[in-house]
Picture 1 (spheres, rainbow over the protein chains, first blue to last red):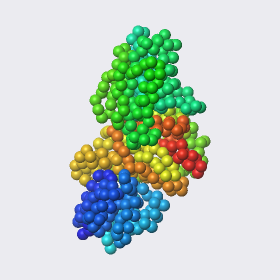
Picture 2: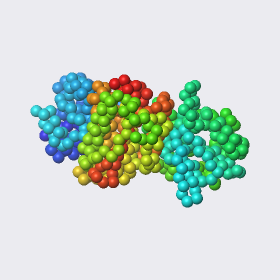
Picture 3: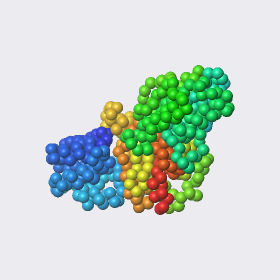
Picture 4: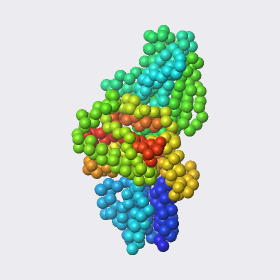
Length: 118
Length: 166
Length: 198
């Protein structure tokens, strides 16, 4: 059982991920912006973060850098519709463990989670 | 310009930058965002004219030929048509306007041209000694308009709010 | 070929035409996966047209529905729109409710907002990959409005700086039923010069 922080500006997406993760027995906390994600990472101490990129205020790439700065061992999985090679490479270089391109299915999410916590 | 005929009543649609006018029937714009629908109406002779204005002002060398593209040219252009084609002087015309909304984007940038269009139309009217009798402008909602030439009523359908008749 | 528009084959390189085709195919695939319904492209249009005459290519400007606006930034900048009728929007919400349970208005709107994000991002990903560009979407904005007003808002913004637009548009039928959606992509003047330089 993992504690997962789901960061996405779309409430619908947070619901989808929450549903998948809770049904698999995990605990979920949510954030709607990059800055909220950074704050909740500090206050909630999740095992894994699912991070969207296209968000208002602070985007996911900035949030990724901030989270990794606060905890270099942070386990972050990018979960975004923005799937371009240079972005993926940048995210991995900045410390993301995995990169899920939306739209995703349940299997992809759970596989990414299990890889991230192992 | 698209024309529809329903029985005896004709409807002329003004596309972007277009100006339509008639002595009967209805004049319309289907889908108004940042653009301005500017109506001119005269009771006697009964004439309606509708402009679909896109931008505030013409820049030197940038004029594609659509008579109502720019507010500063649309107003004198409309008065010219009313005078030349129908013998109507500005003093016999009532003016109404609607549109100038911002559906997307914040308050700056090209998507926010709506309020600037409203100001430009008011400036252009003032420059020829006119003012709009009634206006429903701005906001974040799209609109569609219909000018009933028989009555001069401008029916404004607002998507997300109630219909108003100016 | 649409009346008044210049066929893209005459106006742009075949490499760009191929890039756009790939992007539209990726877009359609993402749409199908997101809505969870079989998806078929019904119409596809790529042409250079006078900005003010673009609406003439659209059948029904009076359809009321959900319009998701996504801005395009990066190497290729511009404006994008996902539009679907109210009927389609409501049907898609019901499909989602089959797995997620009842969705209130906020969640239903969020679904449409995310639909815009996914569809337009998929197009950008395909175009970026084919052209070797970096193209980034802005967070979507949703408006319940009539198609003509949403379209006009983008065209008004385009008209501020240009008379001519590269119009990339496609419609897909969803689930083989009376449900459809359309995507429109308008590179702005800067974006167009980058694309044409490819």
